[in-house]
Image (cartoon, rainbow, N blue to C red; front, side, top):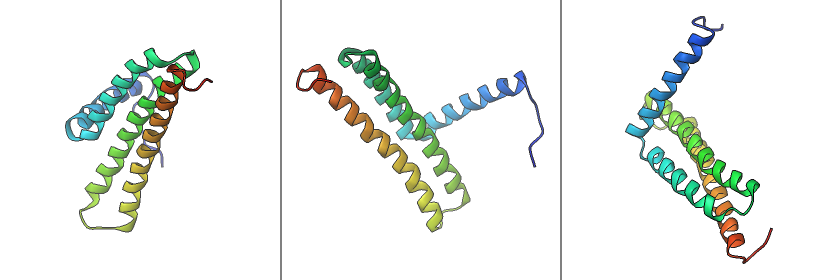
Length: 127
């Protein structure tokens, strides 16, 4: 059954503040979120120097923020699993591992994209 509650602009207004509350909790309790934010900011600055086309710049700007977003989701998964209990359960472990794998895949994609962009910038390869 669907939840009844506020709708329209009031729902959007509330959602905005719930999102801010989530970001605040992430920064307070999760070192990985703070690290991913710092990484995104640094990589975005680097992107403006090494990107030689708008398409490459967009990829280099978006990838770190996707990683940050998935880190938020991974932290949410971990919080829900940890709330259930401390005892080991195969599905709980699998959920946490899958969330971690999402972040790992994006970190690898970031490394690959920036590595290729740097090689292109240094004229070691050309696209």
